[in-house]
Image (cartoon, rainbow, N blue to C red):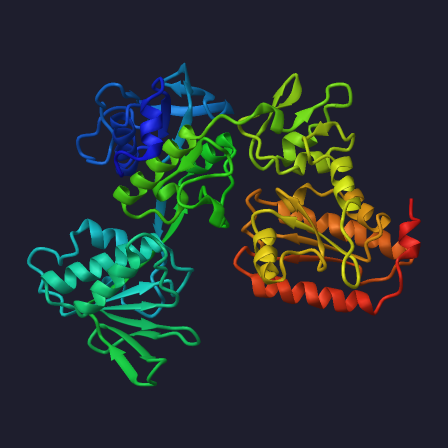
Length: 537
């Protein structure tokens, strides 16, 4: 962790705050120690019943001001950044703690793949067993001359598995002078240090064979050894490998405990259940819930405890050091209009709505995305500057344009930067389209989109983030659904297709943004006037 950063200095100038770290591995221990050294009060909650001297990764007693809760199971988490209320079960006793932030650093689980059919069973070993044996042959057994590692041939490769295989192959290649070959489909090297590790392994003599359109043929040779036949895809050369041992990779999944913790904390998960969604806005350790961060195996790609601990600690420090948010900018629920349908509680992607008799917004957790307001059937949720009437006034205030009048509702994080860069040379967007910035396109109600036509627009663009890149998790999906509802209404009015379009952009796509605006303008130029839509109530 870098020392002397602005974030840590600002933390240390304030009253020490408590951070709760959940986990029972080396990564969790490092995070707890580093946070304690930063001047924070730390609680390490581990499932371990006591210090296990056989397991060096098992957390033990920490130095003050840290506290360790052994045999702890998280039962509930309420509140927001700065004031989380945590309830643990510890040996039949309820233990309550408050924390300014929570770090989830749980472990994963690994299960060996089934031995590929055709190979002699005595020559096949799961990776976990190979690592447990120290990557060495049994005592008294002859040294290995060749080892083949299978990575991702039966199921999708995982960065943690790819890293373990490459490190094992590098160790054998360097220490025992045995030829190691890695057969893989898609070598996942996205995690910290894996690309450098693959280069180091190749430099040491480890051979990599990649299969994209074919697969090796596995058999048992007459001498009892494994036989692996394949054609090298780049060169077409035929190979026959007769290794002494075939090491089979394993399936990596989040542990049941990690999944349970993620559900209690309200953390979004990725496609395989790991506790960080596939979202570039969250890297390296943030989650959809402000004040809750993830690290290590809990977030799928964590390999290096040192790097994971550094990323998680810095994320905690930066979030805690941020200035408190102005409560007046957060969403608020009008009690007189709220019917307690709990729609806001269900749709909020940031866990910013709590239920205390009636739903209420937690100001420091609210991201002003507007999703709750757009979904509220009673229009009981107010967000200053983003209410439906506010957006309608912005639409009506649009300047005259050259050619068809286009109103673009655009996500502030993605489409807006792309559009502004695309038209910077023209002095701005005036004369091209009327831009309405929104924190998230998911905050647009169909009525707001249709109001643009009533205000004289010839066409409307709803521009959101790409799939899996929405800061509000599912704001882009909701924006598409609402745009489809508005388009169906236009068709019912007889306006015909072409006037309303939903598109996705990234902030680094100015050329695509310019092309999109030009294409949409050309489409509108071929349509009749929207006089009918201006009169639509």
